[in-house]
Length: 353
Image (cartoon, rainbow, N blue to C red; front, side, top):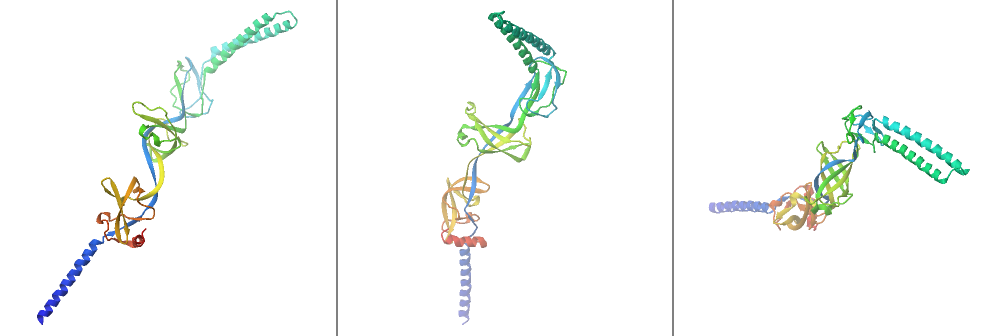
């Protein structure tokens, strides 16, 4: 009787142990995973470059002749309007020439009037009148030349903008070509940068760009591509692309170096978290859950941005993929989904979503 009781107790112990092993085996066959829905996301191809900022308009004003500067009408870095006088050069001799030419012109005109009156009464010939007309025209031309010479000695701003620092003073004698001031219109900035010919097909006028200056690393400057140089540099095999950026606050200065990113081929397509994509050679896969089992699905991926992977083929929005626990499962393996959200997702997966 005692022997029968001992055997029965041993059988119960073995049964309990066998049940525990089965439970542990069952736990290993059904690892816990986390699911995430396939969602549409915006992906943008980027072309990165480095560009140089240029003024919208810029001109260096120089002395047209060798002469003494009588007056300067600008301050360092000041704004000047279109047509504003920047500098006046001495013009005393030219003023005298103009006065003399004006007297000669007046006398020639008076003599012409007298000859025309005499011709009307038959006391002057037509040839005499024509000769006086030529003399009057010559005097008028000399007066116009004197006025032009005077105008050349007044330097004006061709457009509105900001002048450079003044490095010359009134009273100085300058030679022809001496720099007086540089006027820059920086209300807009032209940003020139090179793009390799292999990427030119992805660059079109009107595309948005984002530029970052080292002086303002946390402030992006936005603009658009204005034009693409039709001629490539034969040494670099790249074309110069010009973009235009608004610069109302005048933070950007001509000559600055900026990093440029062109947004090309923007699209909204299905995406999944990067953790869910498994690479095998040159193939990519994800796992979905159907009827409580993991199913491996081949996908064609694209860009990776902001922790997401572009899915070009293989999935549709609304499907759920395994994100955490991918390394623990295999195709056809029983899985468990943890958390209330995943439990709900698991129920949906059983319906084929």
